[in-house]
Structures are given as structure tokens and as C-alpha cells.
Amino acid sequence: MTKSLEDYIEAIHRQVQRGGGTRVVDVANALGVKMPSVNNAVRELASLGLIEHTPYQQLHLTAEGERVAADIFRRHTMLKTFLTALGVSEANAEADACAMEHVLSDETLARLAATTERLRADAPVP
Image (cartoon, rainbow, N blue to C red; front, side, top):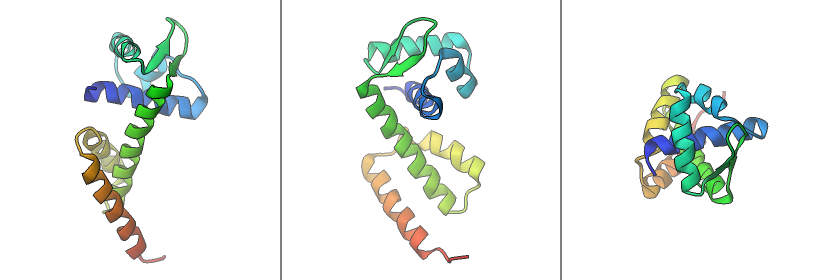
């Protein structure tokens, strides 16, 4: 799956987690892209069996789509947590996590997660 499609399915996942459902326009607004771009991504995600969509209706993740989206979201969250533990600003941690989530191996992510836990354990209590 391309980085772009991963961004779309993650955005759908986030929208669904917040309010139970999402529409193409919601995804376009969340990602700051045009509706035709979202429509193309929706068609591709549907052809991969990751979402179900009827035109002008809400988007729904399939079971496989939910699994894929949850994994991408987990990677993003772990990376953002790691970066903020290093002292990176919230805004930069968010942007960097979004860029990194697509390219790091599971092994690297596991090592970063372990390092994050050590950083948290060593952090002084205020």
C-alpha cells in the first residue's frame, strides 16, 4: 500500500474513532486535499477490500481495513510518543511521526517503543 493510501485509511480510522462514521468530505477536510483525490483513494481502498463505500454515504472500514488502520495508527502514536519523550515539540512530533510511520520496520519500531519506555521510566517526577 502506498504512503498516500496509508494516510487516507488512517484519516478514516481517526474520523470513525471520533464520531462513529465519516464521509468523503470529512476525509478531504482532515487531510487538506480535494474531493477528487479522496474519491480516487476511496475507490482504491475499496478495491483492496479495506473499506466499504456507497456514493454519498459514510465510509466504513472492513475488518481487514480496521486491522490495517489500527496498525498504522499504533505506529504513528508510538513514534509521536517517542519524539515527544525526546523533547520534540508537539507540532514537529506530529509531522515527523506522520512521515516516519510509513518507512520504519517493525523491528525498529519495537526498539523505539522499548527506548520510549526507558525514557519515561527515567524521567524525573515533577
